[in-house]
Length: 411
Image (cartoon, rainbow, N blue to C red):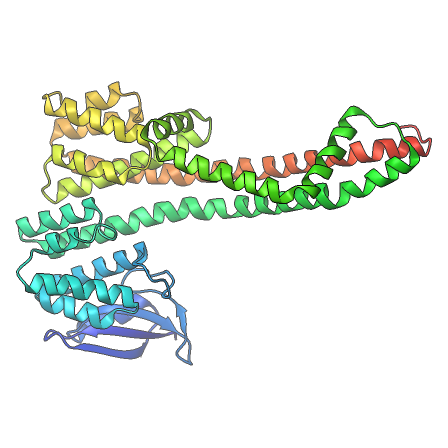
């Protein structure tokens, strides 16, 4: 059976480590709990002690060598702190345990700073708010709601669930884009070699033979020679274009125009809308479940949305909600949110179960994102291959056509 290296905490707050043999991670957790311990981490290891599958009580991933506190680190810390607090340990002792368990210096330093502030009488939410580079406004307000309601452990557990679901959604999109990105990179390198190395070799042949070249072939040869002799300039222009685009997108007006254009694209637009709808619904539901007022929640969750058009639409909905019009009707009038989602939210408003309905909307659009990504990738990959084949075919034809003419072979 597999071996699992575990870390657990006793009711007195003492950290215990060891290795257990079990059929699954859940079996290790159950054994530790039956022994009166609070399981913190359970990592599958090989017989020599090397990690095989990096898992904790929930999944854990991410490079340990990075200096900054990553999203994976934040999710792990949230889950572990929630576990300790729900087990009845005081906040100060829980923070001390997490400091001892920290694998990265940056995580340990951050936790030490926060613990010292909490010991000095500062509320946890205020201590977290001083580190906005790690803890978002959404995170801080969730913690503040837990402090006010006296259920910090439960709030942190729901917050960890939210972070993990958000990461799963993001990872599913990124994973689907890996193969097309590799394919596009390989195609770009292949075309670059073809244009800068292979095609210029034929220019000398054509010059020596005096073969009549078509205008298209002459343009191809001139382009290849230019790229070969001026490649530093081309790379510099590309880098300048990327920097200009990055700077332009930091301007609110440019970002809104670009995001609006993206939403109108045939495939990408629908995918972006589903992703933003899932993020909006899950964020709002999580805030409402923890006692944050609806109007305040709408103001907070704008930071979680990536599309400027959706953020502007949320501002409109918040303004109309403040005027007493409710939420569903203004959402429909913006023509930004999917109609099905708006109808489900309207039912939630009418029945007084808005948070539950929002979670159903989030689950629905999480699945829709998965289906949309699979459909898009199933279409994108053959299209990229066909376009690459056509591009190479055209180049080869423009090169072979005059060569065949030189040999007096009919084409």
